Length: 153
Image (cartoon, rainbow, N blue to C red; front, side, top):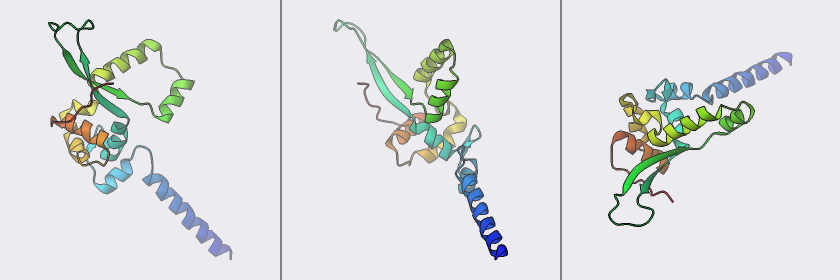
């Protein structure tokens, strides 16, 4: 009886360890098992989750008075939603306001780092066929393909 109980508990523990390793937050094990491309040490599945938090829109700037002679300016703006963990970290361990404001301003202009680095192209290629339209749009932008960017409201 004790031997069966011990074997049963061991099997349950081994199963839980494998599930924990497979579902770990950095997705390294899962990415390696599935043969995913990596960028900055993180596999495609991690980048998919990261890019899902980003949104992109086209911002039009022009003359507030409506003069036709003024030039219209247009640029792409990126915004990122914080994850639950990041929200809690900011709540309990706040970052100095100047640092946080500068970081948000740079993120708005530049977007995710993977878009600017040629080494991230293999991950973006895999994300072109992602089920999420937001992730597909950002992957197309990073690859220099035509992507429909919505106007900012």
